[in-house]
Length: 239
Figure (cartoon, rainbow, N blue to C red):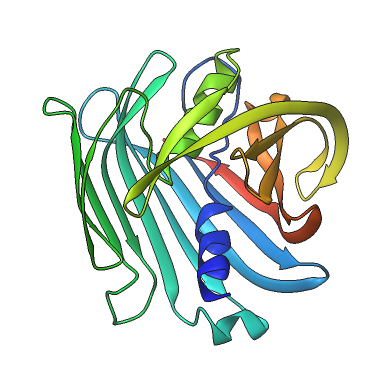
């Protein structure tokens, strides 16, 4: 249960918002509410910013549990990816995850060496040394890649993502178009499903084309039943 809550709080807040679907990322600061049914279980603040070099970016999320969820995730979770963009592609350079406690047993630190074709580091106290195949993403950069592709008019398709010390394959499928109410107003959205073959878990994402395909709502399901949901609360464009 603890791992499930940590993953939800860290992962739901990572789809960056943008002002126009022009095929490029835009800096932003966004806040999200996370709920389990009718119960609020947390909130998060995510920032996407340009890096010091051309084409370099970072995305960072700070998440806090609330209510009963604080029993399993009492600290502030932080997740940060540094990556570079090229066309409709993203190459992560560095990924860090801190579960918000003084213990380091659940923390993750990964570094990507694209010349050597390796990703190395530690994940939950285990050594990581894996091939970095073309298109490989971390748990934060994958969300930026989906946004980048949608803004460029390209389907997300199947994306490889490193999780802990192994690689998973997520397929994004367009389900429908839907008009929904949000804290930012009533918006037309496209709904995508993300899932791994053979897994009982899936995530649905609502992206708003009028906001540059911002993720404005998401829902995690397990065995077809709703689990956690996230809703955008505020958005500010950056510089």
